[in-house]
Image 1 (cartoon, helix red, strand yellow):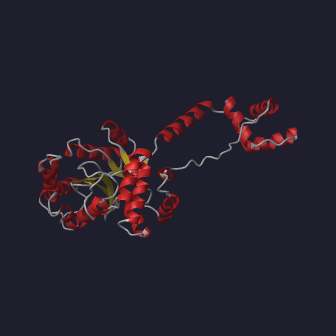
Image 2 (cartoon, helix red, strand yellow):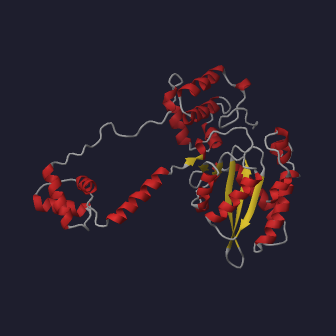
Image 3 (spheres, helix red, strand yellow):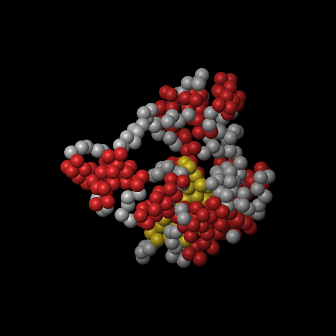
Amino acid sequence: MARFQTHFYFPTKDKVTPNKWQLLRLLAKEQISITAQLKLEWIIFYHTICQGNAAQTSTHFGIARKTFYKWLKRFNEKNLLTLEEQSRAPEKTRQREINFVQRERIKILRKSHMRWGKMKLQRRYLKKHGEYVSSWKIQKVIEEEYLYFDKVEHLRRLKRQKQAQKVQKKRITEFVKENKVNHLWHADTVVFTLAQGGYRYLLTAIDEISKLAYARLYTTHSSRKATDFLKRLHYLTEGEMINLHHDNGSEFEKDFKKACIELSLPQWYSRVRTPTDNPVLERFNRTIQEEFIDMIDIGLEDVGEFNGRLLDWLIEYNSIRPHQTLDYLTPLEYIDQKSLLPMSSSHTGY
């Protein structure tokens, strides 16, 4: 596959792209969102490079075939808005039709039984007043009148819920890649089980374009250790990282997330249990296993010695070892050729 020639998710070559698709791309930039433009790229890829092969298209973009077929069926080249997400909200929503008598009855009943849930209160209301009211109405009265047994705990719960709602994970499938060094770094954790018991955690990272890579071994699996790794990686790239992609591991939360905010570094998440979302780093993890871990004469127990040996190997990997995907340049040679990130191999030693 040729290197990226545009800022779309997959590489294209203008000389083989039909004029119709070029025109649709131009219209898309004016009419639809980035997410919808990505779906347009799926369809263009399907009709041009893949020549109608849906399976190959789905594999290339890391999406379910069912998802691709849905948007292919929905797509109308005369109306690009068909690629936008459609609201799933019902046209008619239930109104809060709670009359004054019902409200007063529910309030009295709730105050008499503060520990009861809405279903028990609904049953008691029916027996006492001979009238059916939905549990939804009971819940609304409780919320609006603030009839909670433990109000402090309720406020805490609401705060946690609001914080969780604010944090919407951005999925890597929505990311628009660019042919720029440091535009997207991938990070991952490889877990090793020691023969005598216990674990070691190897954090790895690689740049999507230049294949510049870094790794470090840790004894614990925590966001604090992942933050230490991130700061070292930040130093390695001279603070030029633009986006960071990783899975949904707990080490990439808490302290790690705070550090990303401080560094103005957006986090992009893989889909749950979908290692194919991170193929570049999966390949590097295999390389580091085969060319370093399997070849050294020490185990992972001595973290200091291991990281010292690993540092030497990383310098070789980044500045001496030719890479086929880079036309047999090293990552540092490729970066120097692009003149985007001046850097010497000494930076890897941080």
